[in-house]
Length: 163
Image 1 (cartoon, rainbow, N blue to C red):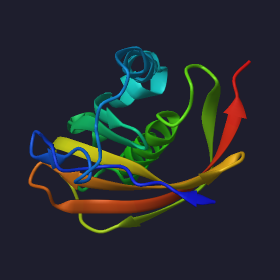
Image 2: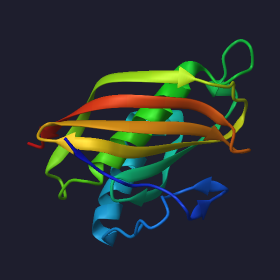
Image 3: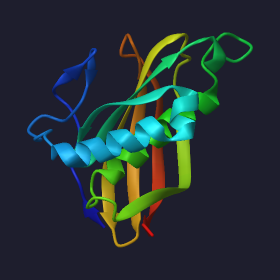
C-alpha cells in the first residue's frame, strides 16, 4: 500500500483542517459532489453531519450534538461518535477518486473512546493512511469544541466501482 499524507494547519471553528505543507484546494466541481452527497445522504441528515472542509486525502465533518445524540448519562452516545469517525474517514477516502468513479464501504473499524462529550460541536477529522487496489486504511479523530480528544479510530474500506 502506498502512504498518503493529508490533513491540517488552517482553522475551521478552532479545529485543524489540513496538515502543514499540504495544499487544501480541491476542484470546485469535485467539492460540490462530495458536499452534495453528504448533504443529501439520509443518515448524514438524521445525525446532523455536515462537511466542514475537504482536501485531497482528508475531510473534516461537523456534528452539532444535541439532546437526541445523548445517552442516559447525558454524554454523546458512543454510536454517534463512531458514526462521525466513520463518516470523516469515508469522505476523506472519497476525495482520492475521480468524480463518480467509486464509492466506499466500511469493512472493519476500531474506535478508542478517550473522553466523554456533551452537547455542542463535534468535529471528525479523517485522513487516508494508505490505499492500494481495492482496499484503503483511514484514521480519524473526533474532538469537541474545546479541542478535547473524544475518540480515535482506524478503519479499513473497500473501494467499490460505481454502477
